[in-house]
View 1 (tube, rainbow, N blue to C red):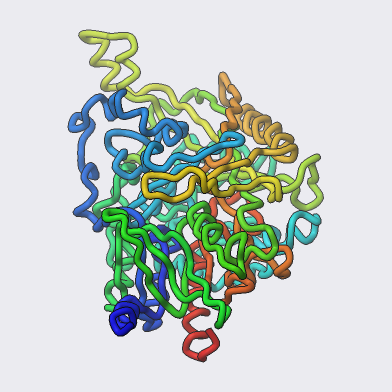
View 2: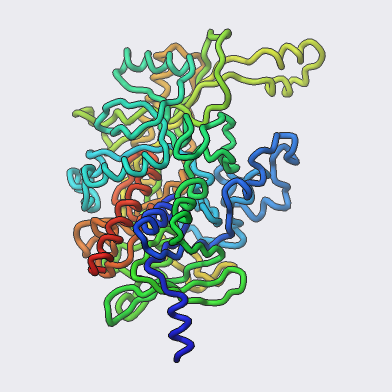
Length: 565
């Protein structure tokens, strides 16, 4: 008994954070800076900023097979490779092998994962946009799903808080559907993008701006400015984009209050029937297979939407036979992603004497303009566009196998200007879109396999017609030539914006979490990753995960100090 008490004491902390990605890093930073002794658990290997980015400074000729993985390795990444861009020789070390953690699909679902310290904060697209008041009100106004338990004014100060630390470059616009952030100087549109911007304003009264991105346009908070290499997915040795590794985890470590434990797969949350609270977590050591228990007063689940929901579904007890916090029956349901890969491409005449600087790490952004101010369509909500203009380079000459002076001309002279854009549309929450666990099958680490039954429905399909046609219309109005449209929807998950499976709400009978991201029935467990989202809006969601995490962590710290948790 004495040995057990001693072991429990050694494994006891003020707080436990599960996951080290975008939301987990923020939870760790805020909890430790509030003086809480915090255990941070990561299921994958350790990754230290700069020293563990093995391909960050490699040139193309340093990578074998033109940066393609060999055929014998592709069998391990069949579902991960559906994106078309993730698995490369230069980035394969960031992505999970499907053969290690298989999953099942009732309908196609692209679950794109990376397990290591920093998670997908190393590989994310860095587009950073606030949700607006209309986004938080939409469900209630339209009678869709459940109402958000908060409004924009509740989260706005926390958007500012995380933006000031992370560093978001962009342009202020004053649009109600896309609130402005705390901006670093904006990166520049190129001349062709400016032409489209001006045409759109004159012809349609629509806005085009530079993408708001977590890439530093100047040095910020001890991190270097962007070098316009556009090799972000390899890890940035300058710290020029926001990642947990470059930003929040070093801040947490600086406090002396963080214990980071990699190779720690959280199996479940431990529920104490006497107190009605969680007492800790069960962890499978990924290297030894040993089951270890850790204890804390407060627990933050930041293991990603699917990861955190899996942990809760696996956390069964007499009180929660269907998963911790699942009194409503909504845990695992209401899965959302953004639907995209629909838009237009075109060619641009002229501008032969113009070029652009470097490889800018962001494109342009066109904020939502549909279903605003009475401009109603036959679908709900809306979409925004992301795109860019560029010139064809020397590689076009390889196709013709040109030689001699012809090849020299191709190498020396850039090709014609082209432009493309794809829309990102909102997906409505639907109880039928869900994930669950198949306990009859397990992965490499003995954990139950996830099953997905998620699909885009009628509202998304109707929206895609405008997403395609509006893009072509704007290109044609700007005088572009050979405008073509495309629509390749793929499956949910492909946007890597999965969210909604442990949604926030006002009523414990219809939601999992309350207004502070606490499980209604287990108030010392907080979930602040994408699973908390009540609706998806059409904006990239990662900035919202940061704000929710910072807000909830500070609230949890205050409640602990008051003795109310």
